[in-house]
Image 1 (cartoon, rainbow, N blue to C red):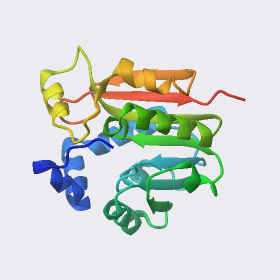
Image 2: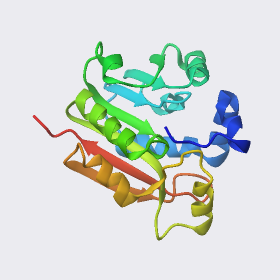
Image 3: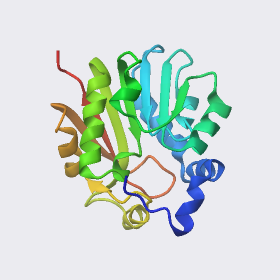
Image 4: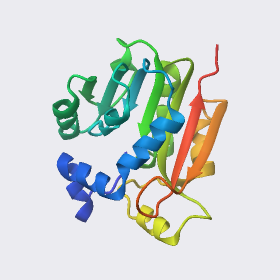
Length: 209
């Protein structure tokens, strides 16, 4: 996993500081948009959240869903359990096929802000894993910072300072997804935060029989 945690970026290893910074830039708005526009309308589905962080997405999800959150940070997982312990299952580990062997298929797999921390081989492995654990017609959703020609110059500068060292353009993200998925919808949005910023959202549908 390629990320820069030196200097000011080191403060984001603290779960409370991470959450505060997220709220200040408008992450709650981004989560609301994501759930409203890209998630199932149903109140009952199974969801795997890869790189769930402190699981703040749960504030915007229906009570009835079956939620599993994985993150490499024990600090983030401890915070998730403290806030949402009765809302899901949380594990402080990297997601691998072995760690999912006891779980059934998922309707939604989410990787929020994860791909831009992964090199190409790691990203392709993520898409492969996502496809393996999805139900038929299930969907893998990713959202990451993106470089695009029409973005605000301030957005480009902010994104260049991200901890993740693998921020890509939309075409590169899509190509990685297409290594495993035939049905990929790519959307670039510039309206999801309170600050100038650009996101690439991939919707990867498991259409295989």
